Image (cartoon, rainbow, N blue to C red; front, side, top):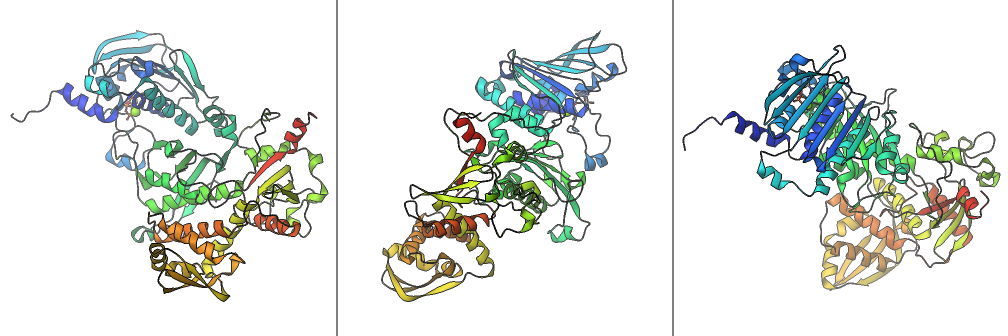
Length: 609
Ligand code: ADP
Ligand code: MG
C-alpha cells in the first residue's frame, strides 16, 4: 500500500480514541470544562449509562455565539496561548482536544449563553461536523448534550462493559470531583433518578457524608494542612541537582479513613494534584505506607488527598486524558504526602465504638463544617460523666484543665501531640479483656493486642540505638527441622540486630544465648520457632521490611495471651504502657486494641434517654 495521509475523519477518530475511552471519560471532560468556566452548579444527566445520553449543564461564563463553532475544532482552546504557558497551567483543560474528540464519535448539541448577552447560541454536530446552528433563549451558562456515543465506532461500542460497570465509572468521576470541589453544587441523575446531590457549602465533610454515608464519613480523619499559617509545608529537595535551588512548597490536605475503615483494593484512594484528578500509583503508595502497622496487609484506606504545589513543579502535559503527571522532584512530594497522612492518623486516634445490636446512636449527630468528628464527639460528652476519679494522679498539669476536667485531644498542650487516654482499670473479663473506664464511657481492651502494641513500639524505639540483649543464665538448645535451622542460620545477622544471640550447635540444633531484654520472661524456644515460621513464608521482602516483620512476629509471640489471668497491678501497668504508645488503638497487625461503649450508648441501652 502506498503511504497516504489519512482522511480527516479517520484521523479524528483515532485521536478521539485517546481522550474518550468510555462514557465516564466524556463526563470527566465536560465536568472539567464546566469547572474551568467558573461554575457554581453543575448538573449531570445520564441515560443508559451514557450510551444514549450524557448531558452536562453549568452556570459558568459561557461561550460567545461567534466562538461556539471554533470550540469544536481540534486544538482550539481559550486556556493557553503559547508554549511558555504550559509551565504554569491553572486550568484543568489546555489541550483543546476534548470537544473535538467527543464530537467526532457522537451526536453533540451545545447551547451556551455568556453573562452579557440576551440570547444563547445552539449548535448541533454529527461525527464532528456542524449540521445546524440557531439563536435560542437559554439560561446563563453552557449545556453540552452527547447522544449515541460511539455510534460510528462499532469497535469501541463492543468494548464497553456492562451497564452497571460504566455507570460505576461515571459515579466515581462525579463523586470525586464533588469531593475536590466542595464549593460547587453537583447533581447527578441516572435515567431520571437522582443519585447524588451536594450542597456546594464548601465543606468537604458534607460531601464525604453524601458520597460515603454518615457512618464512613465519621471515620474519616482530616489530613493536613501543613506547617505554616496558610497550610503549606516547606520542603527541601533531596535530589542533588535540585537541592541547591530554592525550597519548594507542598500543600497536602484532605481526608483519610481511620484504620478501622478499610477496603480490599486501592480504588478508593483518590489523589488530586493542583485540582486535577490523577492516577499516580507512586503517591497512592505513599498513602498506603502512611498506614504502616495500622492496617493489615492487603487492606487499603479510603482517602481523598489534595496536593498543591507550584505549577512549574509538575508537568501535566503527559497524556491526552491528563490523568498522569510528572513531578520535578517526586521523592519530596512522596515524602510530604506520607508524612502528612501519617501525622493525621497518629494524632486522631479515635476509640472504636462498640456496635450494639438494635441500637443506632444517631442521637444528636450533626457533623458540620471542618470540625472533626472527634471534636464533635467531645462536644457531645455529657459533662456530668467526667468524674474527678478519672483524672489520674501523677499526670502532668498540662493535661488537666484548671476546673479538673481531663483535657481533650484538642486541648493537649504538651507539645507531644498525644492525648492522654485516661483509663481507670476496673477488672478483667474472660481472662482476655481488661475492662476500664475512660472519659467517654466504658472501654474494653484486648490484653493480647494491647501488649503486642506496647512491645512493638518499645522494640522499634530501642532498635534506633541498638536493642539491649539479656544474656540467659542457662543456654537453651532449640531443635528445628534441618530446613528451618538452615533458614534461621542464614538470617543470624538479622536476629543479632534484633537482640537475639543464637549460635548453630551442629545438626539442626541452635543454641539461644541471649534474648532482647524488653521481651522479659518470654519463652526463647517459642520465639525462635515463630521466627522460623516467619522466614518460611517464602516471600523475601526487602531487608528493612524483613526486620520489621520479624519484630511484629516476635512481639506477637511474646505478648500475653488471651486466657491468661492478670493481676490488678499487671493490668494497670499494661494500660499505662499502652497510654504511652504512639498508636495505642491498633496492634501492629492492624487489629483494634480497644473498643468503647459511650456513656450515651449505655444511657440509651438502659432507656434513660
Ligand atoms: P480545553 O478544555 O482543553 O480548552 P475543550 O475541547 O474541552 O478544550 O474545550 C474547548 C474550549 O471550549 C475551551 O477552551 C473553552 O473556551 C470552551 N468551553 C468548553 N466547554 C465550556 C463550558 N462548559 N463553558 C465555557 N466554555 C467552554
Ligand atoms: Mg476541556
